[in-house]
Amino acid sequence: MPRAATLVKAAIAAGAAIATGLLLTQCGQPKASANGFDVAVSFTPAASAKLKELGKKAVVDAYFYGLPTEATAGKADEDGHINLGEAFASIDGSDQTVTIKGDVIDPAMMDKIKADSTAVTVRAYLDPTAGVANVLDCSIFNGPVSAAKAKPVAIACDVAK
Image (tube, rainbow, N blue to C red; front, side, top):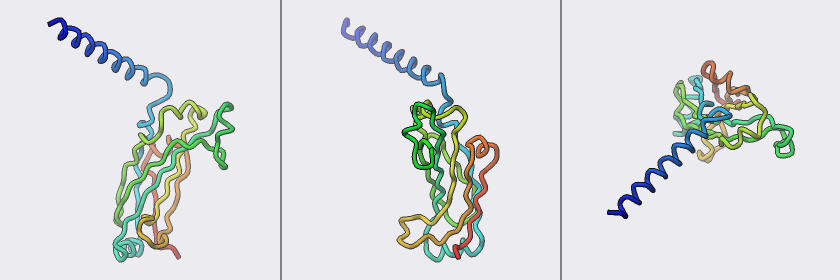
């Protein structure tokens, strides 16, 4: 019986440690998952037909980044950004809205960027595993995540000329 009491105490201590850790993660910067948003993708009839003809899908690609702090300026890429993560969604050639989850952002990276500088570039293109050159010409969104969250990001796709 003393062994059972020891196991119960250990379980309670472990639970308390986990709860404390979860509470601490709620402090400071906003959670990365709060950076999710919707993308409304539209295809011209020609673009839809081309994807159907190829039997392939399109990819919606969201690249998250931020502006470096003074301390992290040396770690910025050639565009002057700190990479926060990338999310992908595979879609068929019909008009639709897809949700991009912001949980790809590593919360540890949020202290490496300036406050309120979280931004995203959203693109769409032919799935690169299709084995053919990209046949889609789609608009691009590049701006603050707050703007992407305000209303669905509009991406329009046509056949590349």
